[in-house]
Image (cartoon, rainbow, N blue to C red; front, side):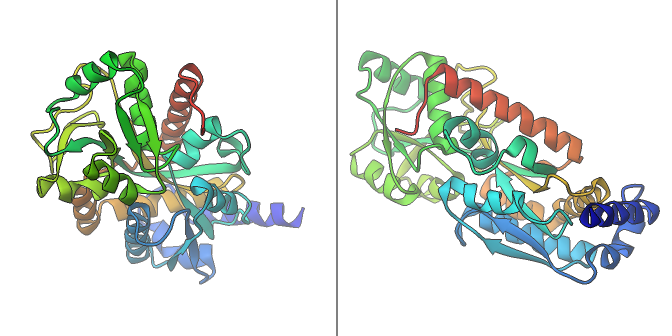
Length: 331
């Protein structure tokens, strides 16, 4: 009872100080909210990856904008579930938040029979951060020069065309499943423990194509080791302006992106969520942050906590429906 009363008191105090009502009071009240304590941003993946890089940049820019101390803690494992479970079970005081994304907030709940937490009830969306498409690639010497040729080959030889997966349940995996479902064809999925071994076998000829993140494939595309056939975002990438989207290639409305969103424990006071949201908005407006996202092929998202909630709910519904209709399993 005491903890609930304390959280309510914190929320009331923050509202009284003007957090959420404008941009002037919230930064001034930062020390009152945190009590000088650091905010822990849990990243559910290993250091050095794309999610980790974005999280550390966001943490740095939030620190600059707010005066808070935001520190990143990596808790990898179980396709991001370990880290997100730690966030869900943390004290709801705004001092522990997490960098969630498509896999652990939208795909895993429908794909995995047992989840240690429920993203719909155990987490409070704070802010959308950015979205990152995946890129359909083949070897540079492949006979296929456009997406339609891969589809034609797969239809002519069901389960013979091999798709390399950086991991099951990833956005790259589900992008391929979505394309196969909409195009009414079947491929043979070949899963790997990460993008590096998947790309090694693709380059070696053991598999035929792959949906890879820009971080994983962009340099190989520029170095003419891989050929990009399509991107899964609604619009073309600035870093690959000549590569069409999947939607342009005959699948209107197609979208499969690896979005990132900051979340907090579900019982976090709304005023604290609002304060964190405003800090994230300021971080996303930082020119250095925008440059980092552009260089990796990401697009900033941002917006209110309610926008984040609506976006995540729509993604959860979208991927759950695909997984059910296409009968996708982890096997």
